[in-house]
Length: 305
Ligand code: GLU
Image (cartoon, rainbow, N blue to C red):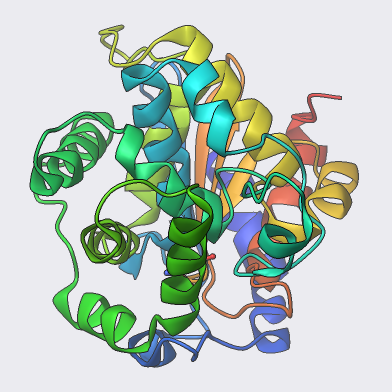
């Protein structure tokens, strides 16, 4: 496995030159666009890493898989489905279009910005701070990393420039889709997106999802198998934004990307994979990260289809 990962990183490093780091959130523009790293954690807890696997990046939309998991653990799916659909989205991740044009005004799925914002009220916790800590604690548990924290610079930058997300949230408030205090919900969303991680952390989250909620190695249950199944189903169909169909055909694994350049994959019953490559394509996905996963998937026959 180690030589395979070294080889896959070396072969695909050239692709980092084909993308651009995200700059619509100014703090993200300082990311190293040449970085490329990978970590694999199997469901037994064995771990391998290659390339720039220790590079820190902000989790961004990858956190949406964990917020969805928390909401599914804390609230009946029937009540979530009343305000959020579980359908694919062909528009960009921050699109407002379908909120206005669809009759129900529901966000299309919980892995795009509107859906991820609308799901926050379903996470348990009376005070908003408790909801935030509920997600952070689960991330610390899944990653076995108690030093997981928000990157303050990214958080401030998100807060200052997150006007599209504000628009989505206030629109959803006006249609009754978003319950609660809009600014408090947005603040949780901005903070969660700004959590700093490495490939090791997201590979471990992927491994827990791959193992149906069991911690790799110890077998301790941290989430319900059915919640993990739904998260993986959403990752397979919607996890790579409006490139999810192409990714399914080239790679065939449940994955969630973020504009920080990370991609988290969960291969059912096998392993979690974390990749970082901050240079993105026009859809907001890591150019080299997609190549790495597609290469690895064909070498290890990981496609679930
Ligand atoms: N914080 C980012 C935003 O809301 C997350 C986007 C992403 O990673 O897709 O725009």
